[in-house]
Image (cartoon, rainbow, N blue to C red; front, side, top):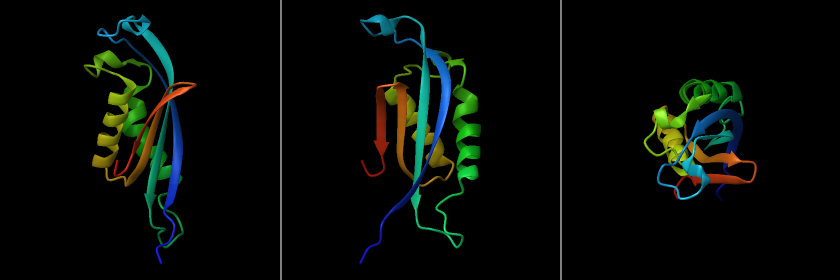
Length: 120
């Protein structure tokens, strides 16, 4: 019998600006968002009964993503900073850092988000 998958999730708010020159609507103009990045790590429990210590997850995500993107014009960092591209870039960075990602959700607004899932 296979046991349940265990996941831990932390949420990371950040502020950033961008514009989408190709967009036909108002997103063509510079504007800002209060983003929220949710990072879920999945895996077996270790000898202490955790998948990954929350403090370790915070340290990795803050140092690799939030410190680099918070209060920046994302067009200075990326050619096409759509929410979808940002989510994929976050996945690439965090997976390269060795996190066993289960899901990433990037909220661009209070009611709009992008979700990436492992194996999808």
